[in-house]
Length: 215
Image (cartoon, rainbow, N blue to C red; front, side):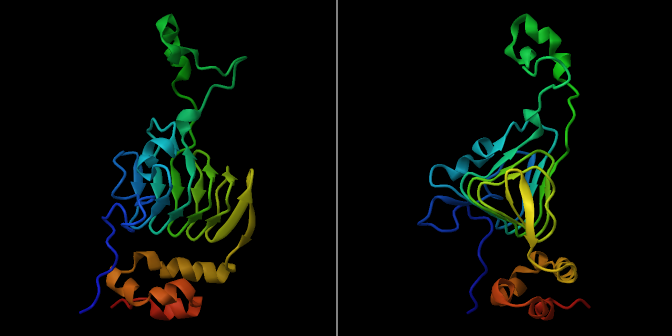
């Protein structure tokens, strides 16, 4: 009897490792979208991801994370709600303190936002990385530990530092285009299961050969 693929609806994919959670069955906020099998690892409280790792998320901007992403401990997404006015002498948000200061809440509305924060598929985040508002991270990217990502990251780019800069790309432009066309993360689960070794350790040629054929 064939073994079934891993279950994307199980909160803890490793029963003996409660520090690892799949994010799709965990998140409840309508402002967060996560694809299947993307996981977060944290020895303290991985189930508090929405409050401990997605900060200042008051909307309407969304955090979108693709499939098969690996998030190391302490990865944090800073959302647009962290924004303060910078066009006057003080950046302090007086109206949120209440009292008569709340009469001036209009001073906090309409602050410029940077849009949704979007993470592609198969992105690896190292320990303690921080992603700033409105950043778009391409498919297959790698974010080095401790990086502060302030600009968009290209598909299959490796970035690191504060602010994070492009170290190199994992493949040349031609192979990146092929990988994006193959889009293995969208393969049916049964087909992906049959080709796990190819996805993890083979060449782009091999992956292209293994892709499901369309009729």
